[in-house]
Image 1: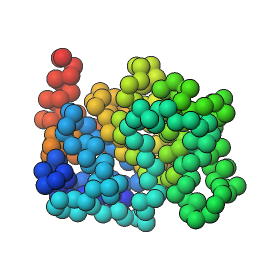
Image 2: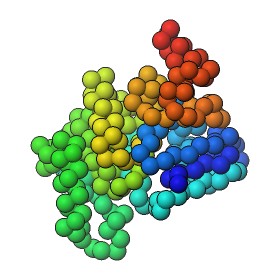
Image 3: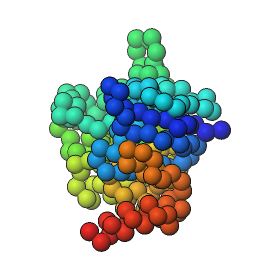
Image 4: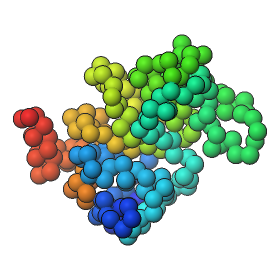
Length: 236
């Protein structure tokens, strides 16, 4: 059974449709990259998947027991978030807030999960440092560890490498791919980097205010849409 299903869904703002014709499924263990130019509807779709925005038409279903509080979300960072005055450990641990419920304190299990993800992201040396003093790449590793604390099923990442230098970008891409491969965690990632998307993702959803393509990456590469956009980037 699919974790997430979109059935001819459309999303928009104040009656104006931003993206439509969404017809796809995400299954356990998939690594789906949502690609497209700026303004194509990628971030609007993410808001829809998080149920922050209701579909204008069509439906979005969550299956296989997936609850909204079981999605680990890494949003695009704002300037205020980058300046957050807390330790890296506190930021990571805050990923357990959804699971904590009405309990006033974090449990030993919450703290153990935070420690596990700090080790997985190789950020033990950063745990006591102030988050706002970290580099962009270090901050993204901390936020990824935080998102992992919130889920055992789905990671939803909105442009996680935006603003990072090329070396750090590729390190983060490899890290996300290894998490998907080694843990079986489903990854849905919005990206403007088509070359890296087809290198790491198992599936591609290409948007241009409607769904141009959805399917396996291998099929995307030989599709008319893939040939146009991949070929265009290589010839640019």
